[in-house]
Length: 336
Length: 272
Image 1: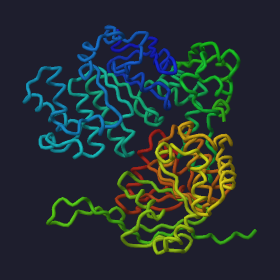
Image 2: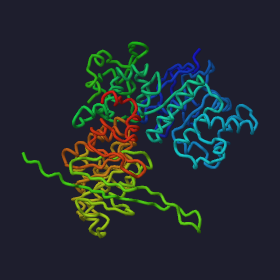
Image 3: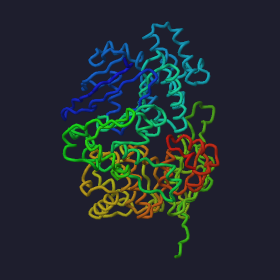
Image 4: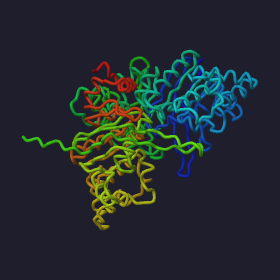
């Protein structure tokens, strides 16, 4: 039995403009020690998926499908039971550590809070544990710094404190939603290395959500590419990066400026772009969400859900025009 | 074929900038931040310069000094040979025709209550007192140059996506036909596919309209893509400066090397 299993997870949002589907059937299974990346651009549904995994969706959202932790169904779980899981068995690292930490409480107390709440530790024991956690995530002089407030730390240190908080109860699943977007590139690497070490050391499962292709390539074993709320391609990260199959994935990979290429070319070429813009959730075609922007679109793509196409070694994508797409050179498939 | 003499567009001479922090005690002088510690740079017309560095390295302070939005504590900023900070208010206004700025956040930098044509035409209206009809015509031409449809003129910013808004901000910067555009993290907030569109637009403007960019970013790959030269800043100083390909191939300063290593998934070392 997988540790965490999502099966056709769907999120519908009721809004004043009618109902929209923000996540259209996401499925995956995670074992302990697994690392899974969710990649996509704004509005692709990756953060909604993360909130669904945490039971933190807004009130106007409805979840369908199944999400199981150790076999226990989480879809439709009452709030009270979610509270027992969150921060305890499933924990999350948010994008902006300055807004996610409480500015008026000392960080030591914030790290200790879930330990007292979930594990029933006494205040002194919880604080002792908080100091140990701060040491583990690389805060110098943790015993003294536990009494500091969030604003007294740098951005990278705050994100380390967020990680210490998320780890406090030794969760089974760690969800990191754009954990380093607000940080400088050199600090980014330190934080991701820390997260990777901790995941390996504690046998957690990691779900890493990012719009940054390079970051996903370096930090996860498997990945899902999302577009318009749907998974359009999934598989081992190295396979997806080596041979991207879906026209959207190809377009995304090609659109990124490349240093190695720049070194070879005297003047930079134009970057291949994806035609059109991301449609609004309300305006997504019922068939393939990428229909219309994709150079291979045919009539049926608009109305019928794309079939799954299996490639080597659990690498798969969802496309009605798979043969034509796979025959075409990658540069054409990018839609430039 | 005669090659014209390279024209020196921008010179920054040993510029320092100190900011006073809020006073903590009445009895002590307020603490200071030394944001720029003697920066010297040159930008030649037609060779865009990228500035990379982390937050706190002084790159945005430099941008504000080059735009004459702030005075340097010491040193000079010369635009086409004229000391920007020695100009009278009227002369500075007139000089602003030649240099414009594009900001990071396309959501915060456009007035939400104004129709797009007014936002785009504003620099021309302010500098040249163009008539309403002229303003609309020129705004339409600029919107076309950045790839937006003419019906954008009468819309409001909220009707556009992030990438389209950044195009509007660029159209606004272009309307005075500037020689230099200072872009401070202008594509950082955009998605990868949108970022590619805006970078292509900037490259077209560089090639077709002869615009030179001072392009500030924390993203080395983006800077390298658009610019011919690059300056690496750290702690208020320029620690490395040179042609992009040379700096990428043989980074001299350890910090440049560190930045290169931090660009994930690009395999620079193996390609070099």
